[in-house]
Image (cartoon, rainbow over all chains, first blue to last red; front, side):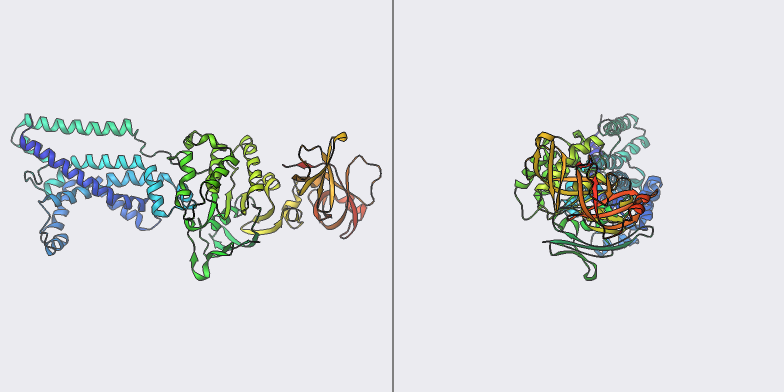
Length: 228
Length: 358
């Protein structure tokens, strides 16, 4: 059965993933919109930076974040100056690391669905007196709804599954930074295989359900044909 | 009378647009040209969907763009209606919501009178609950036209609204456009490459080629210009606006009056005074020096020759004035020489056939 500390880890994991997903949607939407439409020379560089966590070992990303957010790092100095202390081994630090780690899983589906909408509905809205911002909320968001759902699900699920980054910047502090993946690692280290089984089973079921939703409900064609 | 003044210059390297047009503030002005002639770019510049670096646009005395003053009104602030080649309906909204999308966003709400009128005119009342994907191509385009008209725009811009439709759908929509023509009190700029649509709809014709306006003016005047390739075309024709003057039931004929004369046509089922368009193909017109006394051709009219040019394949293109109307005739070069045709000569034109357009 799940122990109280397992439940604590599960709760914490979902808390981190929920907050991170919200932040990723807030950050990722304008970023994906810009990437989908810009002809700037910066597009390639920004695309590459956003996609980096897809190929980078999580420990590498975690290591740099640890250094940056630490007392001697640039971010660490700023947060200390602001009176916030340093971020590693805190809940906030964990959320920030999660956002950076899972951002491509949010930006890429959004970018693809924005690109698929094309210019035409935007031009139609403009000739019907809608300002660009109005057009975004009344035309782009509804047309990109499957993209938003895919982005939210993938971003959330990927954050739940992170391990390497957490270990580097979050450590293993109960109810603060000890998420499920770390808890499973702890169980295995202590040769508590049956406890590990319960938690691992939970994550397996969760991950499978997420993918099932993506492939059946959203049909893996996250972008509907925007024009008829 | 209100007018439209549009001057645009833009340079995309392989394509340049350089036009300076003054267009009437009423009726349908057709921007005619082949693909790549710049007609759609011109329309998009007028809508503000594209921004010409050099340009001045004035509509109804209001300046929409003046590059010298750095003034450019964004599209959503221009009181226009725009109909795209593809209907471009919002696929996430029903027909009703599509029709109300613009209405919700204008400050001086014209009420729903304009919309109701447009819905009735275009016959789409039964489609309100449908999603766009469940409409035929013709229905979609009719909804798009109504959506643009609902806003009570000061000008209606239409970019090849029939081009993506098959022949049957085109025939389905053209009557609506003709009705629109009679009932609408705002200027319409209509882009097309179809001579049929020019003949059926245009009051004013602008011919574009390689980003320049070759000719611009009232329809029959522009159609009959000898310096425009259209006059050489095998399908060259002039369209006269006429009204029904008299029915000759015994002969199954109708007489129609035009500015400066009249024509006999096969019986038209419409009231006296009804306006209609008569198209006369240049290949159906022949020329005689004296009034023929014995001929089966009913429409023999006195005319004055106003221009002669070489046509293709041994033909001459003759431009003549009949009453106040311009007319084109395609005759053989040999005939033109034998008759000794010259500008200013008084002749008779014999019109072998006509077609009624609406």
